[in-house]
Image (tube, rainbow, N blue to C red; front, side, top):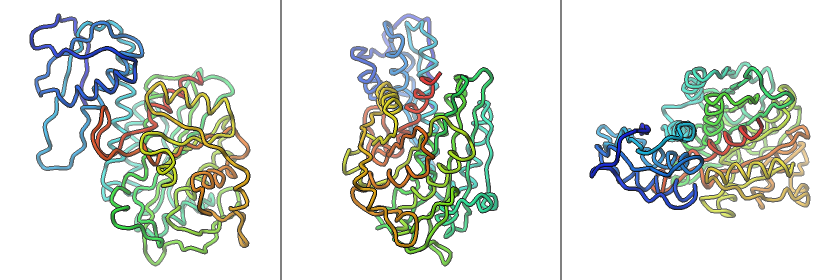
Length: 418
């Protein structure tokens, strides 16, 4: 990651001059573009006049614009350090670095090839970074999942040689605000073939990134813990490979979830909502949250509706929805709220189970309605990040591949709870 430091030095002929006009969003994009142009010996940037949110955004843009992920034997060299001249707001600088680092970590986790992160290895990869920040991490195995009746997670992961897991990460700081416990559930499908409803080859190429929601949730938690935000937060990431074998789940199967609710499987490529349902039910019944969120690359319908830059938001609470929209706007991770239309509830009807889990269009809305039944009536929000979780090309501070969308948004939202 690009090392950005303040410097008392004065500008010289070799100092980079940056365009520092505009608001935080514009500065973040400009810094990202500038980072791609930096030479290996870039040295310093004249940043006089920047402070507060604009400085934080500029730093985020620099770090994220310089981000690269490569498994090439000889990856392209990138600058490793830049000094910012004329900076005296070190708190804002530290905030920008913390949020950018969280996003870069989410990108690394998501960009990692599927062969390197089956569920147990994915879980192993997050334990040490979170523990160093003071987060308590438990990795529950498939035996525990069976005991707790995680029928959705076990069904989705049943076709893989790598058994599923549940990552449970807890931030319980001393002096935490009383009466507040936020639980965030992130989808952790480490590879999605579509199961027996097999995806096309071109649609499968990026499916190692189908755990982007889980990565964003874990990265946000690390940023929250590093800042010692006095809010109790638990992150749950049900992680599995949706693979094909003789033990894969089938259309027509009926799954029993943690809360006893049953789902008729109608499309094995709609696996994300099955694992989220278990984790949401576990959270609402066992963890006593005051607010519940989930974040997932859930539906292709959301990409059709909102494109590749904006995430969909569904919520049962207006204040929660408003707070998330504000948090997203502050870090240029925009959300658009969509309705939980009761008119579509009947499409979930099943003759053999409590619900048909994938009734079809309008796909994003029916998926959200399916999930709502597992939230225990708590204030709940669902973020469908299928579009902005991935970028097809470098642009501004975004890099081709995983974007880390949601990490900064969720960290900012948790900070607002304090």
